[in-house]
Amino acid sequence: MLKDTLVRLGALPSRYAWPNPFKIVEYGELLRGIDIRKTDVVLDLGCGAGPQDLLLARQAARVVGVDVSTAQIARARALAATYAGAHNIEYRCTPLETAGFDRHQFDKIVSFCVLEHIANRAEVLGVVSEILKPGGLLMISVDSLEAITDPALIAKHQMDHAVQTYFTPFGLSTLLADHGFGNVRVWPIFRSPYAKRLFEAGIRSGFQYRRYRKFGTLARLIVDEWRYRRADSGMFLCATATRLS
Image (tube, rainbow, N blue to C red; front, side, top):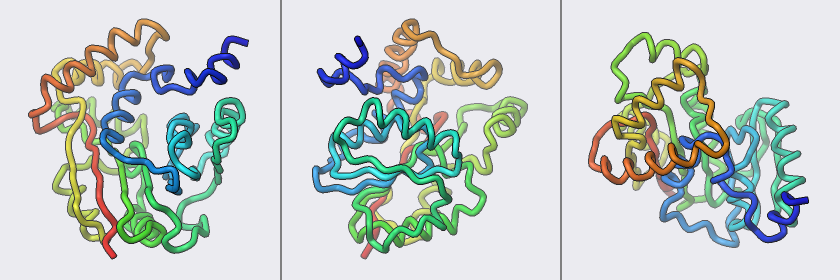
């Protein structure tokens, strides 16, 4: 009953209810300053369980999530049934390259730490370029782990999370430019020594956080993002780019 009341009041869904403080910060950093319009049709590439789509759907006309995992799509649909209300959200369990989207169908495409897991990323970005409108905005985050220097930790993370590629700013910028994107902006996040230690601990023992104690971790991550805003390496990279005509 409390959950239903919070949904009716608009307090839920909220990214601050997510269990992982890294994901809370990541969403805020990638979407900072982005104008999601009431007329926008937004695609979420590799949507997973889709909690971010519940937030995007509050602003956009329509949100479509795609993922290859049947379990994740089932979770996403269940979350949408509980939290989305009248917002227009659709989920498809399919690879993007066989989803059958129309050319220039989307105003914006977003993807949270998915591209590094995709082996045929050139093919996928080719499809992204086709289905995004000219002048449309691509917003992505990817794993970088540039701040981690221990090869054993990187190898463990790569194996545990099926990472195909760790991106550098130059590599990501070049990849996007090669697929028809301009106005490319790439920046690191989780740049502080504290974020590095916390992420390394997550690799070693799992990214598990207590429901309420996470808020202290979250507050420090947010403060340190500002304190170390001029650092040139971090755990993730964020990027925005415009589809050229």
